[in-house]
Image (cartoon, rainbow, N blue to C red; front, side, top):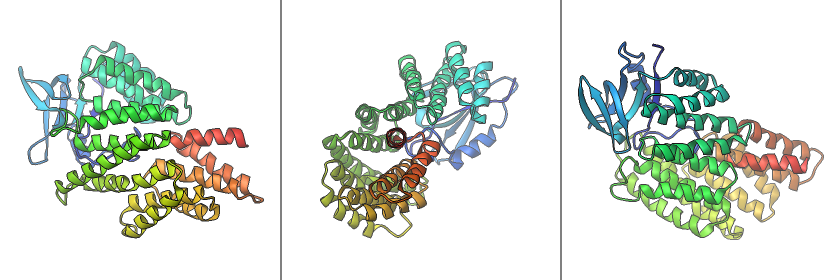
Length: 401
């Protein structure tokens, strides 16, 4: 049998992936350690499951996964069955899979998204194990999402895969990730209002105490941020303002209950900063730029130098957009340029700054305005094709040049 393939599920509170809302992810150190533990498949083709124990340590378990559900993962070990809480399972290395599934992983790791999507889609239809079919269906959608960065028509195809996952595997442990990816694909496909609804539905799964089984509080709060941003983009300011308020209180409460040395604290701090800034972006969306300027100026003064990049760059972007709305294009240009040049923590934010920087150049005609604007817009389509601003950049390049 060839080498193993893995399916990952972040535990509640694990560090978020490298770009907010995207499907490009970076493994936290915890999962890297677990992956190293399971470097090869056993001769029997057993699945390898990494489970968090009560002390937050990873415990490896070998067996055959019979069910991979939200509430629990059912594993057969030595003829006996064991149940594990779905939120404590952080890594599964599949032992026995179809050739198509293994080939899909090879293409995925090489960045050959088309072949990966094709192989995973085939495995989702033909693998003998339902748990592998579910994983393959999700990965087919994620492969298409990556293709969408250069070919936006693929976002609609990704949506089809995510919808098929939800119809076929409504209680699979990977459902929260699929729902987040579906909302993201909807946003990138051009329907911000519907994306807000999808994110909001996911956000509300974590509103209970405890949340719905299988739904971690932090991922659900992050879905709330996605909902508020999408609603703001769609001009649904009442909905956005409401969610930002709930998000702010929810992030504060979770942060207060989180130890100082917990690995999820940086994520919670960033989430709290985004929630604090939300009201300012709602003001801009409502055309109240005069009120937005002092709002963001105050937040900038409260930012701790470069220590809190979310608050600093988020407030800088907000102030730039408010200045732009007031037609103070020169001031706005300098602020957008700062975010575009220095903020590598949030791809959506940097892409937005680049697009608006291009708009500043177009609003301040000079001999090189068109060339400078085209340069920024092209950078967005080439480097940030999987952000909401890429659609705006493509349309501007098409209509203005």
